[in-house]
Length: 142
Image (tube, rainbow, N blue to C red):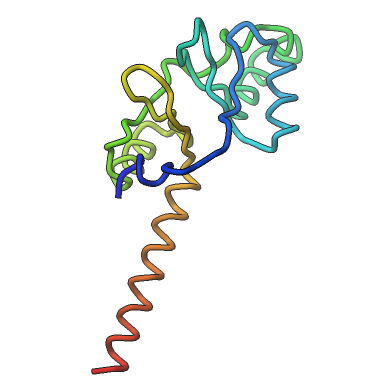
């Protein structure tokens, strides 16, 4: 299964922010939308990812004054991205190696989706449960 197939048919707008947005406003968006990260756009292109981790690390290093800085100065950059043709297991491996939990899905330089490690793990669990049920059914009929 590919990332493209996983996000196919999603009709949810991707929550993003501009690199010039203040960290304070970025945090408010994360909290209001109950999300852990969002792509950061600069001149219409994905410039990085702004996440809870970015806030925690910078708060520890700089204190609350960092809340007035632009998101573009504290985001994780460059963004690690996925292609729609990437296999889900390859994406999971990439996320593990790069220690990221979110991937913008890019096609021809444009973001066409955004997936979290939770999306990919849920797919894997559903798949494993389905295979287990098929095996149980096969054993019962054998």
